[in-house]
Length: 197
Image (cartoon, rainbow, N blue to C red; front, top):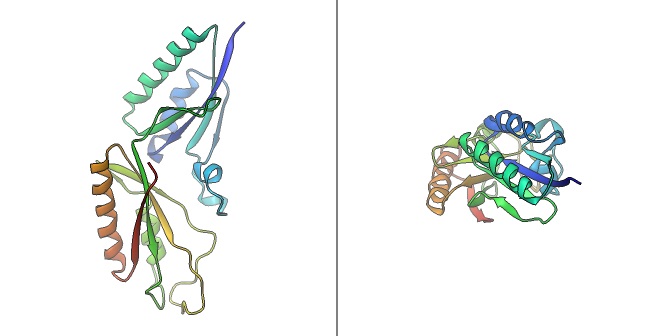
């Protein structure tokens, strides 16, 4: 009797999503795609902004030894793609491959009386930053006050840029880089850093 295990892979580099999913299809017939934002965040979002960067799939084998072999072959192929990803056994909840450092850079608008025209576009571009030391992800919030209008009496949630790197040193480099780019957009922003892993 064969055994079946469910796994999920979260893909950091959005440009590699198709290539990684094509590799998974060599090993699994049961593949479904979703978004890390929809799974792990409770805040609402426009569905048009959702990137399907999370893939669920099953591996089927005759026994545990064959399953481990198949999983290791898949990991070896994925590693050749040269992209950071997290791979999790959905039945045990344990990560088999994990991005070493994950954090966020939050942009707060507390010091601004108005948001200058073009600000949101520049912030959204930063959410797709890709460098030699890591990647960024981000999503448009469900509500944004109109640019060039007064922010008085409006509660504005921070904009978040999620950062993914393979070392703490690279995390610092990426955060510093993003901070500089944010200050170029508007030096009155309040910028805060969070680290999850």
